[in-house]
Image 1 (spheres, rainbow, N blue to C red):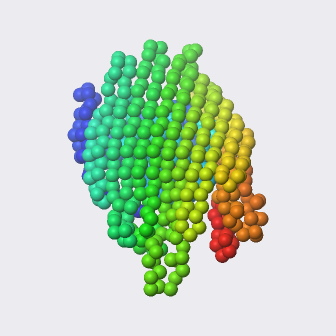
Image 2: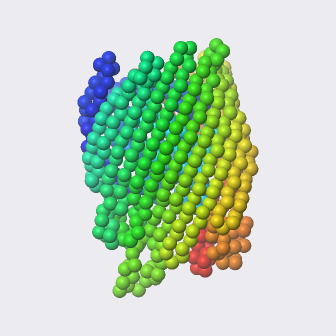
Image 3: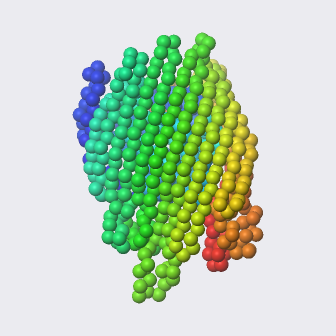
Amino acid sequence: MPSAWNDCYITKICFANAARFACAMLMLGSADRLGAQAMQEVIVYSSLTEQTLANTAASITIFDAKRLSANNAQHIEHILNAAPNVNFSGGAARARFVQMRGIGDIEQFVDPKAYPSVGLSLDGIDFSGLFGAGLLFDTQQVEVLRGPQGTRLGASALAGSINIISNTADSLAPSFVEAGVGKFASRQLGGAGSIKLTENTGARLAARQYRSDGYIENKFLGVNDTARQDEFTAKLNINNTRAGGQSTNLTAIHIDNDNGYDAFSLKNTGLRTQSDQPGNDKQRISAIAVKFLQPVLEDGEIEYQLSALRANTLYSFDEDWTDPSVCDAVACNAGTFFSFDQYRRDRNDYTAEIKLSNSQYLAGFFAQQKQIDLHRNRSGDAPLQLDSRYQARRFALFGQLSPQLNESLNLELGARYEWFDDDYSDSTLLASDSRDELWQLNASLKYSLSDQARLYLLASRGNKAGGVNTDASSSFSAATPATQAELSERLRFSSESLSNYEVGAGFSNREDTLSGNISLFYNYRSNPQYETFLQDFPAGGFLFI
């Protein structure tokens, strides 16, 4: 699909302490200058303990700030195609569903899908299932990890994860203001800045507003903004460091996306639609996280993190893709079908985590409570309303050993035990609950050939919890008797697991201006949670389940 920012001109003015640098640059055409600079040592934040990329035994792609700028990336959908074995599908104003190595969700309607196969983390807060929030303004780097990430994220990352790390108050990121214009009436205004509040406390605030009419022209309504993008992002980070290595870090995020959704046409007319009821893809998200770090013993530390997230989303679309006049003077049946479908969700997450670690070991405890309320309103020739509530509780114990076997050989062993409990109820009087005990494992061996080359072996296992098949249950009463018999056997599904085995290598040249990675992997899925469809719903129709 076209992007308004492929031909966007953004003027960016940077301000920084003279001891660092000062710049006033036009971002257009700056990629060559940025790429010519030597690469610095890259830190990976997605592991249980921060480590360098050279010491990471995993299939990982990292997009640093220079690469994001060179790609003019505004959202993760602008970079995922550059990561191997990663695909995404839209189904909304922004890329909403991500697949890694062929595993991942492709749609969401009635099902809660609180824990998709690919997880999303933003500044240490779990945003899984909210990929529209993957905006990249004032971002330090993005980490894309392929394969199960169970020991770190549990049931939230069966196939892989995406980790977005923003610039923080204690980083060397400059203060700046930027403005831009582009195709389809696109325009943006944003800025970010750091300030010293006290001798030991710093703060960074970043905010951006982006608007675009989008690339769709609705011929029936005579407008060209039914696929509009109206996105606001604000991020605040406050960091306090005290004597003895103690630190407190506060992160607050607010995202307000008021996007339109109008993408389909019966005649496949490209960027022109005929829908009479264009949809929406709205997200209003507020999240906060507090992290405390306390050194213990000689080389250890204990870390506490508390986070909360509240999200209100609205997803709607013209289900018939057209208008009542579609069959005027034409022999067809399409005019007899008209429908508008709307899904409004309210989500609340509360998470706590504690980790005790040193250079050789790590142990931790994780707890999370999640609630998602859905109100579905389908109007048209087959009106339908559904209200549901989904609640989930997760508790986990995890640990990791990282012995240095010799100067060149590192071993890493990790395990996670997770207790999963959820409840579902809806206005069709369906009530269901699940109880799962999940084990995630990780074992890797890394061998350093030199400072510029390494080999690794990795075996890992992840899980995805079972649940209730709400697409089937919500449509049970409207199904034919034959289909009801089939649906009765599909009202629940059990947990699935993914075992991953891979061997890989990484290298860089002596100047650190060129690097590369290669990996070979084998995946085995046990009891996979596939999506399919049933025919004869109603007679002559079909139902996705």
